[in-house]
Image (tube, rainbow over all chains, first blue to last red; front, side, top):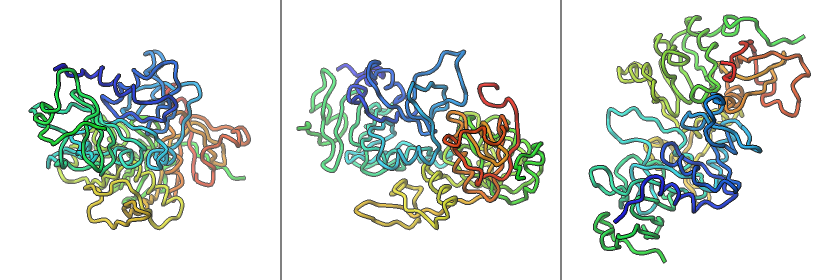
Length: 213
Length: 227
């Protein structure tokens, strides 16, 4: 069984983003999805701090600290891109104008609940940013993460035990072992990596999984 | 003749008082009115409530205010960042109150204050820890949380250019919270890289109309590109 590495997974997520989509990519691993969107197409990357038409990182000599992404890294603006204030930016996110957002997560439930902002540790200093707004507001929420934690626990669960970010909002989970459709009827398997069987995946997840129609 | 420009940072923050609630523009470092914040440190006002997306990093900006022990409470969406050591130290010591607000609710509550609304119903945060104890309502089959406006006594904002009526244009993603904070505070104080003559700003591209601005102070050469 061959797990997808991070780059392969990013490329796989990018394949499901159609040209013309307004897309918000979360901080960290989801940001790398941008590297796999076809150069010849028009894709509209949104950044919560007021950018639509965000481009790749600049050359060192072109860094402008007034032009950064949600992770506070320097970016560029594509021709045709624009700026706007936070009220408008979160109107795009909360108001259902963003077609697809891609986020990481600590846990996702089979019904599409997501937990990705807080470990729940009593001494953790909480920070939430725009995650809750995207979770409830984007038309489609994709999560990309490893299916199993470092200690081997499945992060796709019946019910999240970490503090929730949003309820019933994730439509797809892209993991290193399989891709799932999530929703009211639970998790359905769309694809698995070579060498993995539904039976083995059931065993790994502890979930009563079926294939998507 | 109305002229909202003031020559010095000291004059820009005069009238600030202990216990004030202060909105501060910026996202990360972009759009943070660092020189105005330094002027608040020099002013000496204390027991402040700071409303801002982040809580400062290193020893500058909001972090300098926290380090100087002038801040009683922070209302923010993302206070913990690499280098937010002063926030973390005071928070862990229990002498800094934190109200954590999802970023879009922070924006919407600031806009509600500026717009004269009594409250808003927002879907963000429903069913999460951050909505615990709050009133909720189902409207057309969707669940919402009741959230109240965030008002401020002062807003400190960084913009690119202003004229003497206080009309503003911004620079790139340094705009972020500036325009909506300018609307929500009793007194809005803006630092700009350049003051231009009345009529020079294209009326079609003015982002913040001067009605929302009380004072403008020039801090030349301080846009990120020039820094």
